[in-house]
Image (cartoon, rainbow, N blue to C red; front, side):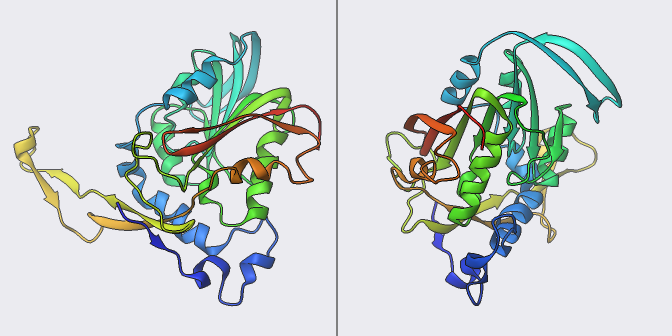
Length: 286
């Protein structure tokens, strides 16, 4: 699989306007080459992602158990839910197709969010509790979650100021003492540890995703022999996803920013399945 370097004018703007923009302002590269791409490939993407990675599942299983009272309006069930359950309350921020959410049910309850309407629609079909929202402007109150998951989200954020903003938002919604797990694609792809098959020539790249052709039933048949490819314009297509891949130590260094270092502590930093990973704990308030 080959990535290509991203044109500077796409990353920074024709006149460098994205560098000067406020962190809350989403640059065109993230709109067109992240959000719009995932909206377009949501169904195909769902067919390639099945369950939480082992070390993500380990993090979930390590969370404490206890009595958890939940009361909220369920968009999926159309009624107010008010019940007690044993376990932790998880926020899966940038949940994608919801592959991590089922693992959370063994320890408590999870609420997923993503800015891709297409992916959230996939989650709703699975009857997950989810919402459409931006990971840099999370619509939850502060200090309410026991644990936060941010898996494969940070590598889609195009500037350092926005990355720091994302980290701060994810940590904000944690209770004091709560932990967050961050995964982001690594520049260093080790053949024996990475499953992606990618080799990166620079850190800011466009990575292709091949949406498979749709299959339609011929004469209502149900076997594979009865399926034919749909070659209409909206079938097979290659989409270019923007990614910033992280060098060793780069992800950890973001937590040294003055807006984070006084109330967030990095407890672990490691490499897993082609990603640099951070386990961070909230020990104060912003």
